[in-house]
Length: 282
Image (cartoon, rainbow, N blue to C red; front, top):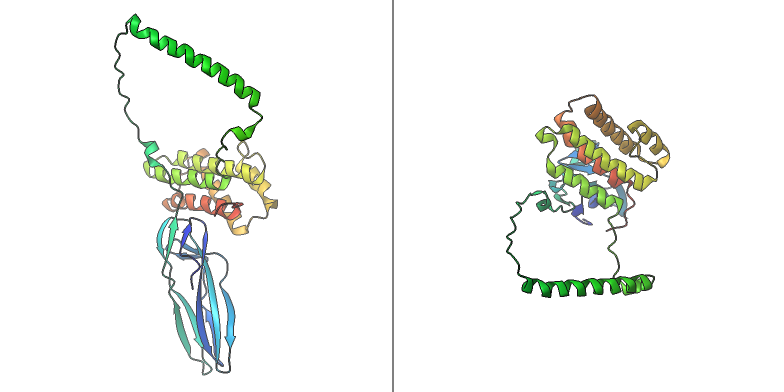
């Protein structure tokens, strides 16, 4: 049973499987790490619930909650369960969850393409041609003048104007900026310092908006100290600490980060934002 198999990056999907256990047998799962591979992670521990019990059979439902911090189509690794029979023999039960489709915030990459500016062609004007335009200009100025006076007089009546577009939440804004940094491929083009500077700037802006303290002018150690009482999960806190430490070494100590550290920087940032966000969107 699947709740959904297509999620937004950093979101979660739950897969459930039913198993019939003969009387006298025991059912247990293989030892599972949080990172299952193929860019798929477990969000919390698997849950085993009893659906039905009869004299001969106990029906169990095992639920797994998956998440991913990388967009694309990911094959969920096979998970094994085991039936320990009364005679001591063990049978293997295989859980094949299929694929997990992970979408991301769409970025308008056309904004990164420069376009040449065409030269403007000009023609000489005669006085006769210019006079009608002067009259139109005076009329427009007069219209704008009276419109401005009217607006000032009635500006308190907000119902006369269209509703302003609400800005993105800090969560969505941070995801968009991190995806834009990923698309620019900075560290692949030997711009490692700029790569980590932009990632940490996005995180500092998000932390300011989410946790309500000034982060842009503080050191990484001061930010981590401020976050201690925020109740952040230890694994996510340690991951953020490691990311900030690597970024400081690259920016200030001319440290050359490994390829694995560079590849994990964006997923770590997305994971921190997703796990601490107050999500008001679907």
